[in-house]
Length: 512
Image 1 (tube, rainbow, N blue to C red):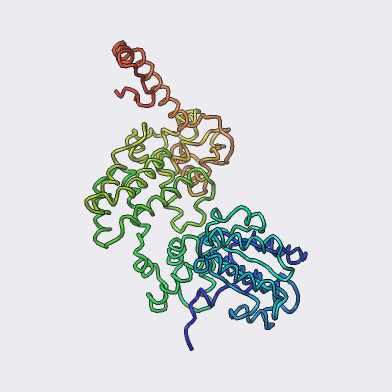
Image 2 (image 1 turned 90 degrees about the horizontal axis):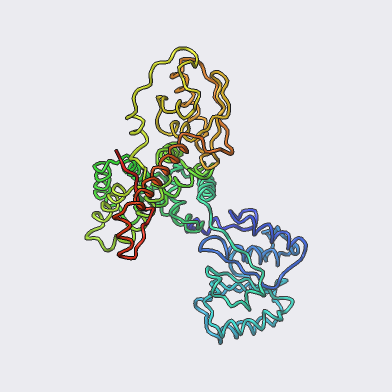
């Protein structure tokens, strides 16, 4: 018995088994149930998201012997022949190889005849945007006055190239790219049914490599099963894809944020020893920096991440401005890579750029700032020695990492003895996680020498947190420096002589 590839074996046969396109399925179900049938449908979306699969399911819904239905039986001759690809009234055309007007006219001539076996004659035209202008004009006449027994289902990856005269006569549905979490869940389901052992981390790698295409994910899964001799492991999948392990990238970001050039260079050397692609490394690094930036601004952005804890720690350690700068340098580094003497050197130079350039006021690592502060003075029982001003209290706490960022970005709403009510801004909602609040609670208890009740909520803030006050002071110093430069006599002479102007954003405060 010949082996059937997973992409074909697990191709959805009805709406209920189609993954990730619920918005399209819902609309088509309602139309079929109400018998409100359009004569032309257009499915758009990137490759492998289910456009032709959906077209076949729709053809079954229209021609099932039980009647027009949103749930075809799958057992009648029409359903079985459509599944097998031999239904005489379902004509699938690849527009990439049938672009000429003569071919389209010949195709449309047969449309006038009644269906041989089914209720409707269904024409599925894939990659319809590749038809020539004359071929579109030939099709337009049939679209304007279609026979009752005919249905068009057009599919394309590039709807912008379809004439508006054609678009206006179609009911258009845009199919989404599959999110990685949906791909992983579907692959897990298939592997359970196939009784093939697999590691979830391996499936996450396959989902990322598939880039939103379920068909690509299934093809890659077939390769992974063969590569791993019937088992899908993270190591085998990473080797098969030539993928950059996230461990390398996370270590890189940590080294860069800590200002550790030696550690960053060593990681680059290790990657070269494994013959990993530096172009792919910069692409993956950019994607990872994007996840960190999202984690700083969007609550729950890391919920589906396997390395959620470590990513959250990094998102809390690195300031938003530095993340943005790292991201831009990664993108530029990838663009410059073909121009470098060699890929390894170009990659290392990109890392050195990240280490060399920093936004004003940024420091290599928050932990370094925490370590540089004097140790807190012992406090007696109760809160007698602690300042009632929360920012002052934050400076005294023996704490680092994400928990310190929670303390710095939180504002004190109310304090009664050793009971603290804190609020963090919505953009820092990820800091309110239980793990960080517990660390902050422990630090407060250690500092105050007594049990503490701590409540942290997410809401509107007034700009009185330690982080906000530091930013305000930094801006005041910069403004004062700018004012001093503008008032300088020599600078005024230069501006007058060369008809120039002073760019305030380039002025930095004086460091003493």
